[in-house]
Length: 452
Image 1 (cartoon, rainbow, N blue to C red):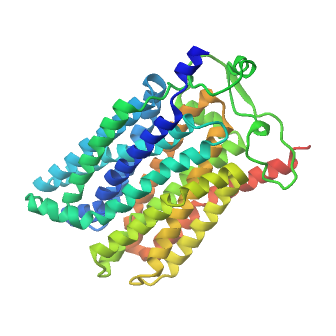
Image 2 (cartoon, rainbow, N blue to C red):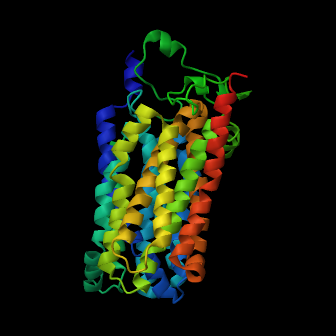
Image 3 (tube, rainbow, N blue to C red):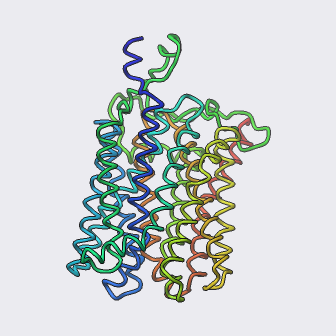
């Protein structure tokens, strides 16, 4: 009993640390990235390079996602998160140096390191589930994501102030916001590194009785039994299907890509992975080109900041609702809601005039809201769809795949904007959701065929 008490983190304190940290990290990510595309386009003189700026950041997040997951397994979540935020702080400093010296190539390296902050922030949502009481994982995750709202909404609104501060310090235009980002990430590193304590993966304990604890040590690496998951089956009256296939029994540590290859064979896990990957790709594809699209048509930086803030408010403001819905009606249904909202947002983006100051904020707000539902529903389903031994490696691999796909989308979005305009960007985003729709249909058919 004493050993179990030692291993169980102080749930309330750990969750509070994660919430405060996400507030700061939200300021760090949003303040710099709000103007990263415009800064890069100005430095290089090429419009399409604005998309590559976001692509560099997202690619950096993809590169560090798996190493951070491995570090979480080996040394603990606090070490992994602190490492990610420290890299982001270094990245912000490199962007400042690059802009001040005119070294355009260095800005891409800085933005790549800057992306580690986003990767760490996404992994913090899984850290929340590790300190949550059983049955409240989605709500704990949503609270941590919601905490990002304050910082992320404030970040773009600070763009003008940061720019003025940077110029008063002798920095070029559009660079000052990265000073705010560097300070915010430095504070995040300090808080997470010194205050957050979560047991290493595989050593997490929950409040169980003696009999449950004795039975809670499975040896094989296995996919979670769909019948044991809290999420109801997709069909209205479909009974639980057979147990998922079991991988070869082993006591060795599971690699991230091995976990991903194992998980995609299970329909529930595949839907979870695609919900995370597709929603992030759609969001990045449209969001990264919105500031460039607006400034090209004569809209001010202040209005750009307001629209991006509305978008980020949609991403995080309703996350407690999405967490509550995931725990109450099931994560697969929340994923469906999110996909429908994303389609609505992209259709508005296709139809909205370039200078419409009402429809553009509406489209970006809905884009964030659909992302919130899909990410929370997908992350909750991912956590409950696989065995604990696969969980952390699979989370890292999924985040890496998500960011690689989003990096590709960000890289081509500038070209698509130049060829097909903002409507073309939104058309491409709709097609990104097709694999998720196919996987969801397959899951529904598998649920109906289970009795056979």
